[in-house]
Amino acid sequence: MCASYGLSGDSTPIPLPGEDEPISEPGSLALLNDWITQHNGHAKITGRKAKNLNPVLIGDRLELGWWSLWADGRGPRGRNSFNARDDSLVRRWSHAFQHRALLPASWYDEGKPRWSLADGSPFWLAAVTSTVTDDETGETRLTYAMVTRRGTGKASAVKSKSSGGTESRMPLPIPADFAAEWLDPERAGDAELVAEAQIASEELSRAMQPDRPVETLPTLF
Image (cartoon, rainbow, N blue to C red; front, top):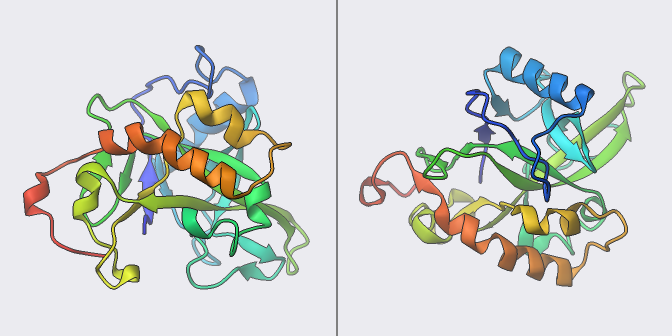
C-alpha cells in the first residue's frame, strides 16, 4: 500500500498526458508551483486534522484533492480509502471508477525504499475520484484514491502487510500514450479498461528503481 508520493521539486517540466508541452495553463501551473513550495512536493494522506490537499489532474486542469476517498459527505470511506486495488475497481470502487484522474509524481514510497525512474523524470499515477459536499462545512470537496497494481520488476520484492505478506503492491503508473483513455469521461470504467491499464502500465512499472539495492529490502507493509 502506498502512503506517500510526490514531486522532487527540481523544476522538471511535467508534460500533460499525450502532449509534448509541459503544463502551461496559468491556474494549473500556479497551483502546482504553490503546492511544491508549501509542501516540499510531498503528497500525504489527508485527514480531519491533517487537511493537506494534493494536485489532481482532471481532464486537462489540475485541482487540489483530498487523498482519501469519500463515498458521501461524512468522511473517508472505510479504513483503506486512500488506495484502490486495480483488481477491485469494478466491484468495490465502481462509482469512483467512472471518475478517473491522474496524480503528478516523480517518486513514491513503498516498503521503506523510495521508488523512481532511473533518470528522475516525472510520471503520472492513476487515481479514481469522488466529489462530495461535506456535511459539516457545506464545502464541495474533490476526494481521491490512488490506484495500485501487483508489484512487478524490482518492486515485486516488497510484500504488502495488507496481503498477509504474500503479495507485492505498487501504484499504477499511466504512460502518456494511454492517459487520454484513462481520463476520457465518456469511457466506461469496466473490466476491459482495467485490463488495458494493467498492460499499458507494465513498462513504466518495471522501470521503477529503489533508492537502495533490492537484495537488502525487508518484507514490510
